[in-house]
Image (cartoon, rainbow, N blue to C red; front, side):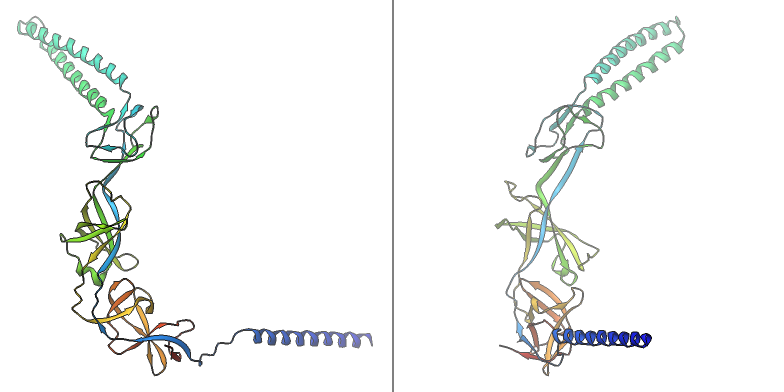
Length: 350
């Protein structure tokens, strides 16, 4: 009897749990939003027509120094003086850092004394050798010793010269990495010098727009900080390898202003004049979906949104020029992309 009761109780519990789970599932389903794919999506759209682009096309880039280097010592030694500071304007060959050379100078004096004595010995031995008073080999050894001493003198002189570290080119000291009393050694940077009298300006250009730039041709550049200052930039390099965005670097050489107000790292742009004579399809950039490699738009056909591949040529401000994939009279969606999919029913709002 007890066994039957246990079985009945177990079955009752299972039934209660099953009913509860079914009820919870129904409640959850009721709470979840069920999107109706057949329901028309409200979008905004425009009808395309041929237009003349009147806006100038511009590309954004960054100014970089023509020359920049970190200066280190060729020999090791204690730093006696740092003769410049950050912001100092230096010319080529100007002394920047002075290392301790007192020991080298003492060694040079010693060698000079040796040279003086050996020079006198050579003169004396030459007279004696001509008179057969000494063997010629003694004169030869003295002459070799004199040559060796002169080489040693030249070596010490060069080392002393290298204790005076000079600027390899004119520019501005942009970093001071040491102080007096520190120890200098080859490969350890002491100062950084940047030459901004001439600059490099680099922009990234889509492959279909590279034809607008010709090597050695000049273009108008300006810095964002000084838009009123127009600089002439000459194309010196067109990249041979695309970056991740399928664009190629185009580099310009540009002379800075007399007061060097264009600084390294500033943003700027290059302007290309657009005569606006040739009409083409121009769409808002916001209408494009897909990727940079394969841009797409939604066409409206028979009340449905149809995904269409396009090819773009130029981009200016918030608009894009389309070279293929669209024709005059096409209706494209410009807003209302939430829940939009290929083949969705759409209604166009004003």
